[in-house]
Length: 478
Image (cartoon, rainbow, N blue to C red):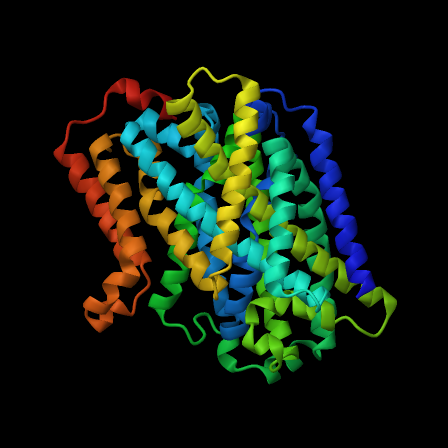
């Protein structure tokens, strides 16, 4: 266990050093919120990759793979489909070059859309941050059994809040380069070793049900769609992603970064599912059977015995998983803090705020939202369920109106407001509504009804109201 503690200690010190090194470069609002719009394509690739692949994949996706095998790739596949469309959105987003998604919503629609957008982002991103804390807490508990998983959540939350508050987007982005490189090379090295330890693919297939290797496995096509859609739509409208595009040096850097991001995401998410499937063959019983979200970290700790070299690889894999969790938590904590500062404080409370005041309030917002996310994490039992809930709010409430801003000139402010409100309300209220609905509908996740309600409102209300002016459309033209 000392080896794992040493690796985690090195990672924490490295991340803190990177964060402190960026502190002296933060002097203005733009420096803190969008890294002074200076990020090159290489940095963008890794910060996009690290912000996307976190506990949703490492815990929720791995839990899914433990239970259902390679059919879990339907969850990651939604993100891959979204990435193909993002290739065409990235240069337009960089051309728009604001700070947040609510900036975009007000410019294209109106102030009400902006306010509703802030609410949807806060619900979604603090929920996503909360299960990063759960993931980090699980890892701390596995390495230090005397520390409970809940105590580990407090420790992880402290790390994340400090790292994020120090230097903003620049800190987050350059930390992600270190984390992305570590995770990519460690997972690529670990998978073939684990397959060998499990007796090769023949041994893995002999141990697991045949459904683990089928396209749908034991899922129905509707179940697969309910995994695919939230991930795809979150990817398309992800504020953290748009903030990275706003931070790019140029439109060309934004476009190039997406190409690298597509390749990295497909490789890493496939490897994560494969490691979880192999881990499920190695560990069918015991603690991990009852807590399958821990399968990656559990396999890293218990599956690499026999030599010092294998032990080091296992420790590095645990460290990479821990670092990815920290990275995703940084990104999803920083993003809503940006909303409260840019879309509420600087917009409605103190319009003439100085850069010094904005930086102070930004850091205070990171602390406040970090504590709120920690509170949410203490009441969460399933990371997979929590991640799908978070994805659904964003997918139904914001992604349709964000895409319409770039691709549908007929979308109106009234249509956008109705769409955001419908998507948010149906998602948040779904669990309360299901007892009163027919069983065939009540058995479904919220994504399909919430998305249908959002789209109906967007199209129907937009077509019934006056089309937007050319001035509103100009910043979003190709």
